[in-house]
Image (cartoon, rainbow, N blue to C red; front, side, top):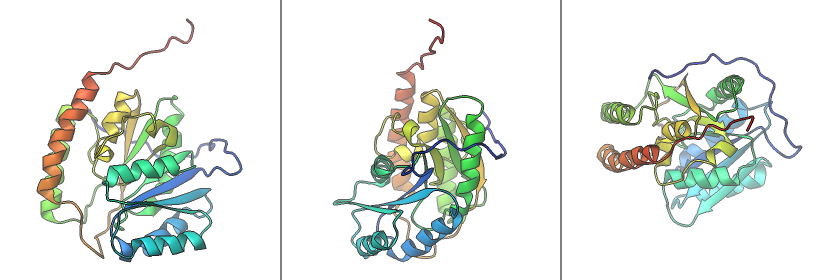
Length: 260
């Protein structure tokens, strides 16, 4: 199944309560102190004029990350800082952030600065355009068409995407991209487990929704090192892959009759 590409177009935004932002940007981080302030600034500039909040989840960092985020929370009224006492992994941090967020829509991105927040407004418009076709849950998945990673990392991702695509048939070329956008309510309905962030397309499809892949920019990491090793990611990914395939087989999406 080929990924569906929809050109963004203007849509009337959903009604919001006075204290409800249209979108919350959830960023999980672990020992990313040098990358924090540049990315926070970039998010604010990218979403200038859009009702938003920024939610950072510190997943048990041991560097200056907690102090920097605490100071930022005191300075910015739309900034939320949450800290895990112990490192629980990226998916756990994303789940914590989404639960704490107040926005109708959620955008997630990696905290290393490789995702570009300037892609978020176009992804938001793409979500609204896709929702015009029906009420099913929509996941907007970033597709890093030009990756700025090592050859080994790109090679590992190509293998993982190929195997996952054949088994799960999620029609998504780049599930490893941290830049995704969806409605908060839809995310809270899917099963939650470790490493779920790599399987969101399959989980949204399992829930009766669909996935829209959009090209996004990708930047080289300027500070720190990746927290994922190629072989570690592949090893745990295989276990998770078969687990998600089991979930797909154990669920039939009911079709509700509107006129019973």
